[in-house]
Length: 560
Image (cartoon, rainbow, N blue to C red; front, side, top):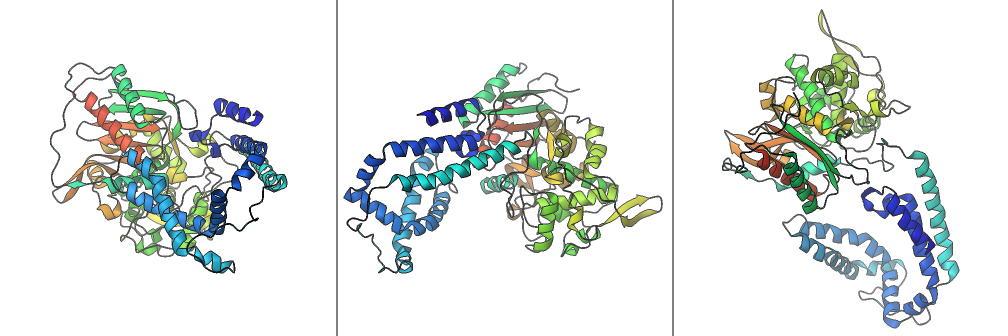
């Protein structure tokens, strides 16, 4: 009772990410101790229950097939996902049939392959479980429970102490370092691609709101709160902005870990950073300093296969470089260098952070300044995006994670001088963040909404011709990639091209989009993540609701 009360107090007074017990070491420890003490308190009744013939036989059979169950339940999860998530099934069906499907597939695998455990254990192989031998199911002793439990408690206490020494507000580097893992925004794009249907012609005219009066903040807030309740999300920060400066910004509810959303709050944009990186590259293309068809070997000669990879391949994730997530650019490019290309460039699609780290190197080489400095010089300062900063500017790490050292001899730079373009060795730049030119940017929804308009509508970043190239989308085998821009459907074919109602880029827990017809941008950060298909659908629904509500109606001036 004491440990259960302590667990309840901790859960109610602390920020628990996603309200998941395993996400908090102290809560995990307290809940584990509560279960342990509860089991010890009813040790004898549990022992008597386990001696009942039917229960004893089930326990005995599960023990004999433990390895098979452990290995093959994953196949059950895969079948369940294919049957219930890859097809259009209702939420009720998912809740009702998910567990039965996994259990059924696992049980079938046990019947088919469980006999291998008998062979491994020196027993006669059997397809059907045996009865528990008499006298084998003795009561559990206190030592049998207490000794392994003590080990678990000591390990948990060590983890609590470790966590207490490493907690940080902007601690981006996860304890679970992931290699060969597609970042969440890449998973979100794959989910969106799976749902996309290309129409033969543009959809019919979308209905208007039917109201002529100015839209009020109360209407927008009520619509957003209704959306949150319907999709069971705990909160959202968002900005809706027109090209004429009319708009609305709000923060409602709290994030997954309990921190309230606030207007003007700086949050991790994650992969939306890629739109900034690509924009600088495209500016260099317009200036004639870089070509989209330049080979990577021009900038990084030591990378194996770099002569076949182009700048365009890097931007569109068709380079063949591996996917990584949660590791520094130095580690990512060291791994990419050792692994080489995974497929012939231009023939496949892999959402690759190392590809965007290569673009960061190109930017530094051509401009002769660090990526962070280039970002401020080329985009943030001229556009007045004052709230947008790199992770290293919020909480710099002690050691540089710059990928310069991933290449033994450094890399040659391309410096523009009065005599033209020439090679020289670029000085070693430093970077004290973790996700750099792929996902290292922090911003507000206000800044991002303005950025969407500057990038895809105005001429303040790139020309109209370049914007057209950004929204020339590839086919489904390449996840409809443009140049750091992806279509948000309805989509249709017109003049041999795939057209989209709107477009943008996904981040870890939100999205940035621009509607070229209504000339409206929407920047969203929400409590869910784009790894969840429901969040992808929810974001589309929010966009539809808000655009329908404001269409044809005046809004307050948000920016001048």
